[in-house]
Image (cartoon, rainbow, N blue to C red; front, side, top):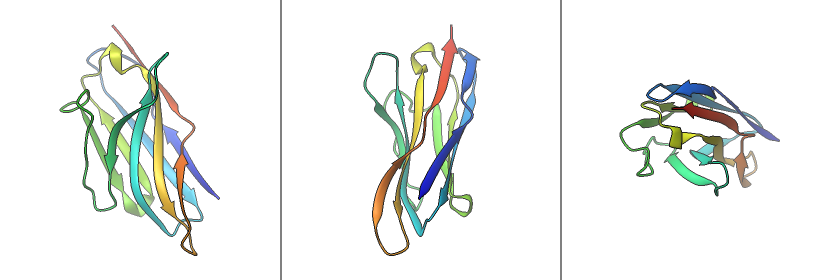
Length: 120
């Protein structure tokens, strides 16, 4: 059993910053790719930024230059530093991780989501 627990969401004014965290716990042999997704009100879930186990990253065009994803493998934690926030960034943010269990089985896990609201 694996849990992804997110924290760090909240209400912030436009131009402000927030840092999201997502900690994985449970029966984990290895965490492969991790990432952050978001779901704005009334829209579909979309990829924000993935990061590989070696630290390679990629960003959606709408966050490039403003958001940074990084991870601490010793803590099984991935972070999303969000700067220069805009009202359009308002969404529920979800953590995702591909985890290999002891025994070799590999599964895709999701966090419960954390609300980010940016006021204008």
